[in-house]
Image 1: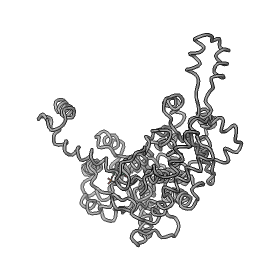
Image 2: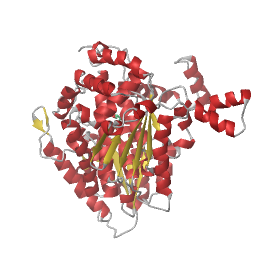
Image 3: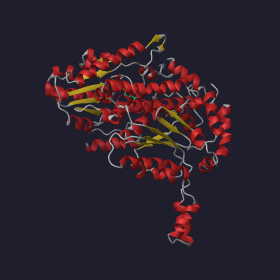
Image 4: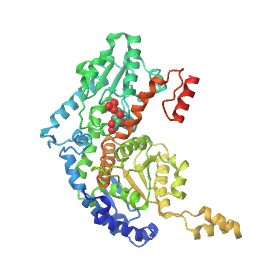
Length: 544
Ligand code: G6Q
């Protein structure tokens, strides 16, 4: 594999950067009337505007050339063809099969996985229907509490989606999520549930994850205490690839939903892990979500690189991270229902591309995955935007917004949207020294205090942003949005030559926790670790 920095397009970009880095977007807009139409793409009702980026026609062409030269098309095909591209775990990466709404077979080792996928979907459909219509608990109406017990990929996707699709959640169904091993998490949830009508979904691909197992045992004890041992089969279902462990826990074999090793945890909300979503919003809407992702899968699979939204998003990210030295990326949804979207993407992106070793085992000599952060507009504006405007770091940002509110109240949505449009404009255009000077002179400033005041108030602008704007946050739109980011992450992983589908780093901390657990005994002093860890453990043992 040719190292990334040896590729001709990379070298050309490095040269080209020297020219572009001194250009201001204000001038690029002023000298090109077609900039918006050149650098924006419409996908159905969704508009992707990337014209407020520090690029020229030549930058764009070079970035697309890099995508080609780095093999994005080849790897894209390999993923869709079920090849084992997760090389360190020797697995295919097929979340695209989970939402393949066509009859196109998708094979792993020559076996079409689609019949099994469709069979699991039918089972989800049947199950979610009986829970929703009350027949699972034999009730006509009233509240049903759905408690998803899972962590990481078995928690964040469903939790984000159910929040995002709240307007579609059936009355009477309340979804709760227990993920943290912290006892306060389960305590707060159980406090709000009625045992008679509570359904626990144990979501764990491996069924060995410490947090999920202990939370499930506590939930099991709660049901047994309130309803007796026999109630377990009615009140617990499992989603797992480890059927035997689920059966040993007491789950009825008919209530175990399958999971495949080619579904990565953080890409699994489209699978049976989405059961809580199907129960909350109904299977039809869950299917719409799948259709949305499928729309983008087809777009990603078929469109040429230069017209391919996730490819463009990815290449712009590469441009900033590897040439401008950006280390972060802000996700800024102007849509309250997407308030969990930034933290959801944190896992998808940072666990996937937080790597520094190439697929062939070399240490990279360039930066890879960015630190993702964000919050909903306008909250973020009153919190961290200042750093994006005037801090020392370049922070590329994605502005995401919905044209129509689910809950139109007075002038709220227009106000929200005026902020959405204003922020990306202000970040791009900034406020020049001359404008600030004129304003301050009018306010009576002069002399030294005028010069100092000017320096503080100048906003350089030239801060890059993408804007995504769609009609309404429906399940289909949400599916599209998530899939766009998934494929963006995929493309960046290909460019950086890393494996985006494993997470060996997090294993280390998990193993150490198991070693430390028996030392938290409230008595004996430990000297088994470094002095800091010893000191912390000993302080804990002294106080507990
Ligand atoms: C995601 C990771 C990780 C995983 C959790 C839960 O890609 O693999 O977040 O989803 O560790 O694992 P289980 O589903 O096996 O409990």
